[in-house]
Length: 242
Image (cartoon, rainbow, N blue to C red):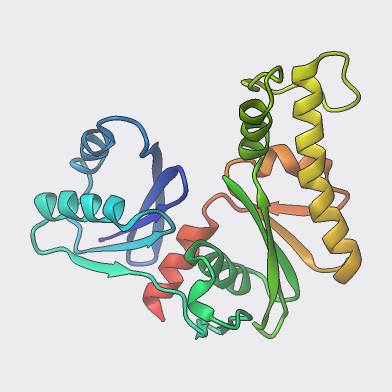
């Protein structure tokens, strides 16, 4: 059995794979105290694991703590740490320094190319919003990055004296109180980036969304969207098979 682990900017997410069967498992905020103990509670009930594949955009120290836990549970486990490259699984990296492209974006592109042929936009709506354009032949054309919804709202709260932190969802539109105004403004800023990019380059390309805020952003887009919550983990699985 293989464990697939995606360590993002704020959360880690895992699944396990037996032969060709893929089982999504869970997620944890690794900034919380004792997250390793909580992860141990989840993993101790898994079947015997022979390998652990890791994709991380966080500090390597987080990955090392998780590797230590995996070796405690399964001493003979084989560790795979995914790395971005110039080409992999039929996808060609557009970056002038390929290793500088985030591994999460790289794996999402691999998964998108594998899942559905044709030109596509891959948008990760997480701590940051990343947007990458992939041609049908597997050539990555480049991407865009901006703060995610939470980061935009947090920036407003931390850098102004009177604007509040946003803790809930509101109806989107012109607002008559500040919390709703911030909620709508940041949501429309994110959806506006996506819409404008699509209009400027390829209106007919498939639009794939992943990440924690995908379901919030998707209804505000004037395009058919495919929400793929496990896109990075799917790409990690393909990475290991190539």
